[in-house]
Length: 114
Image 1: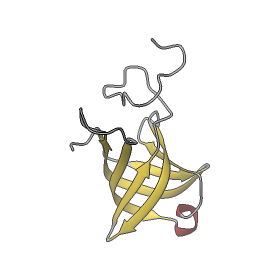
Image 2 (image 1 turned 60 degrees about the vertical axis):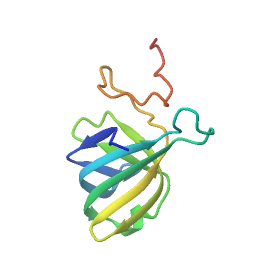
Image 3 (image 1 turned 30 degrees about the horizontal axis):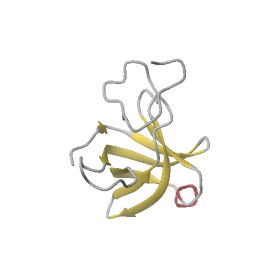
């Protein structure tokens, strides 16, 4: 599985509060292969953990915000951290940017698009 999205920095946010600052990150999307039985699509974030607020990181809802543009966002379903790394399961992307070079075809289209 190769990364569908990558970046140099991002944040996990609890409302407007930064719960974690992330360095290099990537998101892989685990989809059923053709001919494989239907199953849910799973999105995994793997990132370098730069700084974390343990209280905020334990709250819900959390949101992954890709920086610097802040136009790509995913809900965070679960978080695991160890040895300066963070791994999280993500929900479907819910913010879009026109001209996004790597759309997640499993996500709904933004309103007004074709």
